Amino acid sequence: MGFFEAFNWTELFKATMVLFAVIDIVGSIPIIIKLKEQTGGDIHAGWATIVSFVIMILFLVVGDNILLLFGVEVEAFAVAGSIILFAMAIEMIMGVTIFRDDVSGKTASIVPLAFPIIAGAGSLTSIISLRAEYQEINIILAICINVLIVFLVLKMTRVIEKLLGPGGIAILKKVFGIILLAIAVKLFSSNAKELFM
View 1 (cartoon, one colour):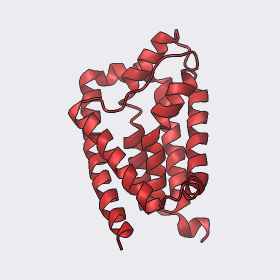
View 2: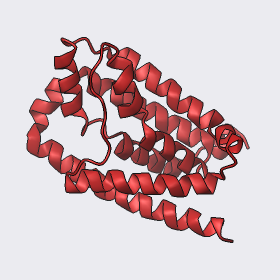
View 3: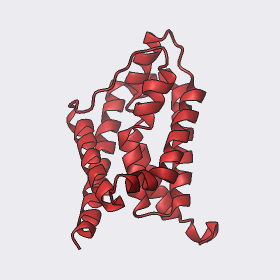
């Protein structure tokens, strides 16, 4: 199937929204500000963006081979991913901490910013899960769009924080948490039945 046949606006939109909700770069603004304070403002938006992009593309391309190496089906990984997404959604909606990230160190632009905050377990799991349903080109474009958003947010962190305020960021987290919860339920229901057929 060629590019134009595989390209689909609906798939692109859905994949973009899934990754945007999972990466949650806007919701990560408080963490990014904390990292900037710890490193004296030495956060490189370009490096963080490039590294996270490479990680996500590599996982999209060779993720299946990694799973085959361990004898895991894509559907099984998608179900596992849906559980992680469910936990992340609960974290966003309820304001509880399930996943803990180490936010210290001189290499903050790469660890933990590029990995695991941007290209973390949630986004990598989502990429594999999306492969079970969408064409690869649409996922690649969705990654590109999200990486561009990440770069812009990293460049404008303090401006965005001032514009949204704590209340605005909290509302965004709740909204995307609910979207993520619905996506997790759909991923689980559509892939779990494939495992038992």
